[in-house]
Image 1 (tube, rainbow, N blue to C red):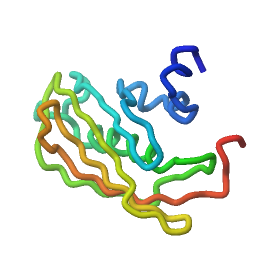
Image 2: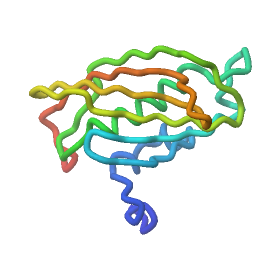
Image 3: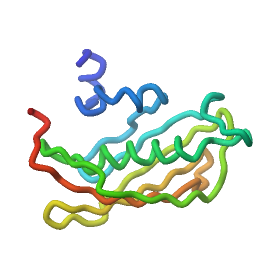
Length: 139
């Protein structure tokens, strides 16, 4: 962990997340059961219609979900997720995904993620289902 990462409170999970880093994602908020992650739409993120590729909107939501559901040293993974796309976005727009814990029972959890653009318009709604494993982040 660099001094800047430690000062910013970036967890080891995200320090090792090369996919999110390659997409330019930034963790804006990281709390137990709550995360906000943002990403600016680049030219290489556009599909053949000139709009943001849905898979990349999903990736942004999935990253916020992963942060929100990994609340302690136990590794928590996605058991499933679905997304509803509500509005398209374009080059240069800033997308933000806010993940919130809805329920946890035993090893299972449900998290909702709302993806918005820089004006606050809702772009997509994502629901993730988590499974807490027996693994820990220490090993």
